[in-house]
Image (cartoon, rainbow, N blue to C red):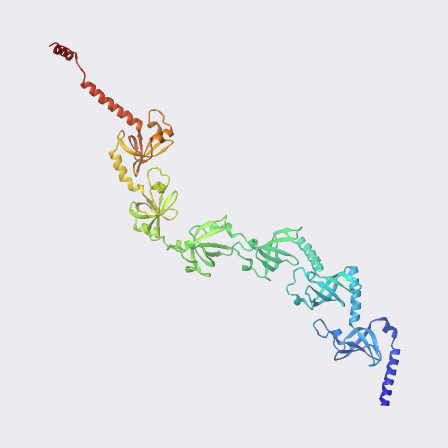
Length: 569
């Protein structure tokens, strides 16, 4: 037992002698020493510090932010001597304290000289409002100062090395705040200045799509982003930019506008090419038939791609002649290639209407192959408008009667003659369809024989019975029959001018009166009458009758003498 105690005492004496041989001033001055790692045993790292004893370093000081050893045996390393362990016979050293000392000196220098400093993002703060950056000492990096853009996945940048600006220091606590965003914004401004100086309106440049929004896509031109608005992607319809572009796409764009004050650049893709709408009317004339692809189905029709950037609308009403389909999908589907016909081109509104049913003969055209002009057909009043009436002839076949073809004389509305739902006889008045592809019909043409009969039986000076229809400024409109109208002008009412109010009081619509025909215009189907002329004629007739009666009652002188003789007798 005494031998072991003596051995320990001797070792401590030897170690004490070694420490004395070591420059104790260095140990007390916190001066760094250079060494080399000779062994790693459990949690201890043995370092040859060039003395008769070794330095021992805590292994945890050499782990990175992810817990991995940053050094290996044989690597040189700078450490700071801390104290002497007389019991175990070694000098404890620290890498962390040296790094913190050097780190603080570097941070202070960077702060004073306003220069960037390198650091590693090592930890996310517990409240996740920022990071700790390893610069030898730990500095706080607020979340808002990490990048210009919002950080969506903070954990993904742990362990990454960046340059930072020191923006705040606490000398007492030996910590502070850093910012990466300041450097990025300065870099952006520098690139922006350089880029804006090199760009010109009309220039074609390459870029990479960085983000896609509802209203357009942002494109990185090499340090600065420009916007390609949705309307500048294609000459055709673009509902959303993602239909044409994806994030990461490398594309060519044309510079449309540069705002140097606001630092904004407007870009276009379609402007690299000639506007196809400039030649639409000649390239796709009315009636042209072609094969095109269905690219989109909507409730009211289908969009058909004629070429890149040019689409036409095939409306649901132009799919078939057999009534309106319940859905577009009954006839076409996305991806179908089909024959269509150009039925309308609007260059100003950049719209083309296409038709499918127009490739087939119209039902109305087939109808006119069976029926011809002058034929009387049965038709049903479907809809009455102010200037025309739509008539149903057969299933899916419509005719039309213009207001001027209802009566030979003027009427205010078709409703004076027709009511919806009634069936009437009408005459086909043309072998051609009207501009709306309806069979042209007429009613007044059925009254031609009535006119001929009237004209044959009546002559000027004939007195006929008529019905008052209405009073107008020019005179009295009268009805001779349903299809024959007459007119009494103001100066044909009486010898003296008659005021409108007086005429309205004297002649009520529906009253039957007699008038004299003064003129018949058969070609225009017009009859002019006169009350004044009739009254004069009647007066002359009365005078004639009176004069005849007077002639019959005249007494001669012989008659008078004979009468006197008879009296005397």
